[in-house]
Length: 158
Image (tube, rainbow, N blue to C red; front, side, top):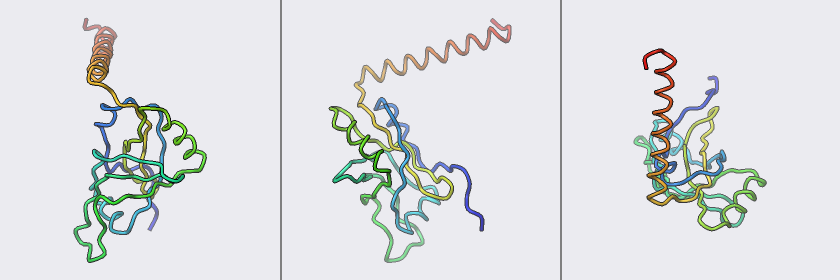
């Protein structure tokens, strides 16, 4: 059977882009068990409470919920277990260096299959305050309004 091609999105953490201003993103592989992969192929995962840490030069994904596989037996996985992330040594050093700055955290943004392999997109983000969130929403709405107006003008409607 031919291997899958392209990117198939499993779960996305939209709340992370709202709560954090993401400075940079990285793609990492995940060490999973067989029932976790089957559960992900069924499209079941939750990233909302997830975060990543770097301990002893290794990256770990914590708090991500991958529910137990329905058809699994006694060797089913634990839903919220800590999973190892696979990153290159240079990327780990770069991330660890940035995380030493105050207020930065490592947040999972998306979980997907890329060419048959499970990957997670993690981002280094700084937490936003409530007024920053409102300002970001206002900027987004104003740019949308500008695009709408320019679109109407180009069509000769306004």
